[in-house]
Every structure is written in C-alpha cells, then in structure tokens.
Amino acid sequence: MTLRTPAELADALPYLLGYRPDDSIVLVALHDREKRGRFGGRARLGIPAHAEDWPSASDELARGLVKGSERRGARPGSMVAYLCQEPRSGESGRDVMERLRPLAQLLRTACGRLDVPVIEALCISDGRFWTYTCPGQGCCPAEGTTMGLPGTSVLAAAATYAGLQVRGSLKDLTARFLPWESTAALGQEVALDTASMALVPRILGDDSRAAVAEETLALARRIRDRFAAAFAVSGTRPSDLRDDGLLDNDEAATLILGLQDRTTRDRAAQWMEGDEAAPALRLWRALSRRCVGPYREHAAAPLTLAGWVAWSMGDELEAREALAMALGADPDYLFARLLHQACNEGLDPESVRRCLRAQRTDRDTTDAGRPTDSGTSLPATVVTPSGSFEPGAPPSTSTTRRRKPRSTANGGSRTGRRGPGTRTARGSRPGSEVSPAGDRPRRSADRADGQTRGRSDNERHGSGEDG
Image: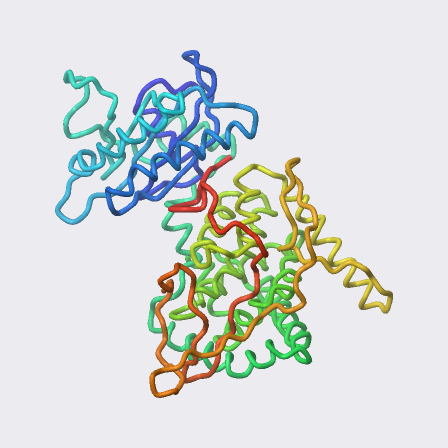
C-alpha cells in the first residue's frame, strides 16, 4: 500500500506502532531517497514537560533511531516526525500545535545534522492533525484536518486483513503495570510491611535463603496454575481485574519480596514458553500492580519478568514498555538493561531462552543427585557483537546486602519512609530504612562491577526504538 498525503501518514501511525501514542514524539525512518520510500525503524519518546529539555530529547531520539538503523545495515534516507499530545485544560488542538512548533523544528534540525531530512512533520491533537511542513499559503486549514474514525480507512482494512492489531492507547498498555492507587493499595502495603518482617531476615541469612527461594517459587507455581485454570474474560481491564481477585495481598507480598533475590527471579524467568508463559505473564503483571507506595522500586523484578516473557512470546511492544518501566523503577537493574538493549536491537530471544533452558536442565540434574558445574545466573550474561547472549562472570553468591538503618541525631533509627523515586544528592538511591514493620530488603544485587552507569539512548523518556 502506498501512502501519499499527510492524512494517510497521520492515519498510519497507530498501525506503525501497534498502539495509539499519547504525549509522544515519534520518528519513523524511511529508506530509499526516491519518491517511493519504505518504512523502517520507529522510535518514541515521551514529550518532556519542560521546553529546556526538548533539544536533548530531539538529539537523543534522532541519534538513537539512526544508529539503530545503521546497526541493522540500513541507514535511513529520510524521516517522518509526529508530535502527539492532547490539549490541556483550556487549550485547543491548535494551541497544542503552536506550543509544540519549536519542538518540531528541533527535531528537523537534529535529523538534518545527521544528514537525514524530515520530509513530513505532523502534530496530532484533539482528533485533528496539522503539518509543520506546510508552506503557509492557505493549503491547510488553520483549525487542522479532522482525523477519520478509527478503523474506517483503507489502511485500517488492509491492516485488519494482514492481521495487524492496534491495542488502544499507550496509556492503556502501561496501565496494566502501574501500581494501585485505590484504597486497596493500603491493605497491600500493610501486607508488604508484615511480610518484610518475616522474610527479610531469612533472605539475608545464608542458612535460610535457599529455603525462602524454594518457598517463593512453589507459591508462584501454585498461583500461576491458579491463573491458568481461571475462567476466561474478554478485554484487558476485565482480565486484569479477574487476576487481581485471584491473588491475595499476603501472597503478592511474599512473591514481591522473594523475587528481589536474583537467583529466584532467574528461575522464575524460565516460565517463558509453552503453557507456562501466558499465565506467568499475567502473574508478573499482577505483581507489578501490587508494588504500591514505598515499595514501587520493588517492581523492577516483576516488570522485567513481564517484559522478558512478553518478548519471548513475540510481543515486542509490551516487552519494550514493561522493560522501560522496570528501568524507570531502577535505572541500574542489569537484567532489564540487557533485555531492553537486546529487544531494541532486534535480537532473537531464542538466545536467551537457550541460556534459561540450560539452567533449568542443570538444576534438574542437580536435584536428581548428579553434580553440575553450571551456575551462571542470567544477569551475568552479556550481549556479544554477533547479537547473541553468552555467559559472563559468575554472579556473587550474596544476592542481597543488609544496609544499616540511618541514625537520627539522638541515635535512634529513622522510621520515616521515603517516597518512591527519592534519590540522594549524588544520584544514587538511598539504602533501606527501618519502618514500623521492620527492615525491608535491599532489592537484588543486580549490578555488575565496572558496569557503565549511563543509560542507552533509548532507555529514557519512553520505550525507545521499535524494530
């Protein structure tokens, strides 16, 4: 199918991404400088709230997409840029278009510096679109052009015939992973506090850590099988509500805390294919929603598991969003960083599956009483230049570290909780503090010595490059 007009390009965006972007900058690469270009890679970032961040965001997005395309052996010949944002209170769609006009120019300049011109730049807002490349000679209405009804265009019909699916908005997709903010969150937080008193000392103890891992995985299997046997419902929201009802607060708290152990998490990641994958993905989503209040940082583990299973099942869209959210919860979470990089670079998840299958086979051999030399944990794997995952240095035997509670001026422990995302002046996350319910575990020691602290081009602001 050939797209010739701005209206057709605007209508094509949800089908290019697989969802309807909101509050987003999107760049789409075009290959072949001839008039008949071919769509290539896509990249998305959230629109920064402050205009002073627009230049760096524009440079980052343009550079990330061009470099990603070059790694796949096809440098873009040109770009199409989209700015998607709904009006704020008191704004019109035209107001949004005018407010974002400097951002559109920054995108065009950033791409131009890379010798990749932007041939069309569109703003989509309030059911209308505007083009920033219009010469301003009355060819485009000032009030914008109305978007067609979803699913009524020729492109929509062709996409449906080809089996392409648009799964609502980006907000709908990420909402499946966001922590509860209803009154139910209080009960879940109390359960997490209570579970931390019982589990943290055992997780930190060398003699009891293995037992906690086995108990965590046994509980996870039972709930995974419970999800698999549940009645089917249609729609993502009803499905998530059903799953929430199948999971008790105490069960969720036990699993969230138990998965902070890296080895336990890696064993759970082995539920990645066959009949295990779909109910496991539902369980990891449900646990992500239970990481409420001061436990939001604990969501890195279930979010990474959800991203991994989604990628293993072929759903790169959900995988990218879940992994990006995991990195938002903890930018240094190595497993998420490796998977996010690999997914963005279009690697085959089979290389990761082979690692996990080998671990599962080795453990089965050990459990049967035969020794094995393998024990490499997946976060110790590295992405090789050839695009495969290979084992790196063996992980430390200590998967968690106790941090001493901070002291107040009078020598007592601080009982106040820090809010989610709080950082110290140096930019690192402060250590766990003592709550009225007791010590919370530091999340898994999922760091690599000497690992660069900087984040990849596509890990900030949004989901990064789409293949």
